[in-house]
Image (tube, helix red, strand yellow):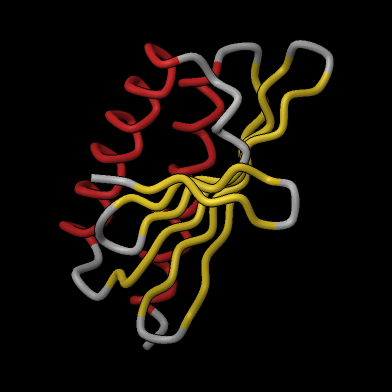
Length: 111
């Protein structure tokens, strides 16, 4: 279940589990289904590695046919961010989530 909000001119999709997607509202329905599956898989993997994960925000900007994804994860009051740029949406998402997972794991090791 998700909701579509209009905040500050950016389409925001709120998924369950404190997951927010910004800038994805312009995607066609099949692409949005794929995005939700990729984000869901990524968040499940991150939560298994870092059980204290309390939220994830992903922002999408499309420039010159390239997908720019920025992700921000929250765990125990700490933040980890990552970005990815690619010609393929799934590759950009995966790259940004990989950086977030690595940051969260490093954050846990430093406690």
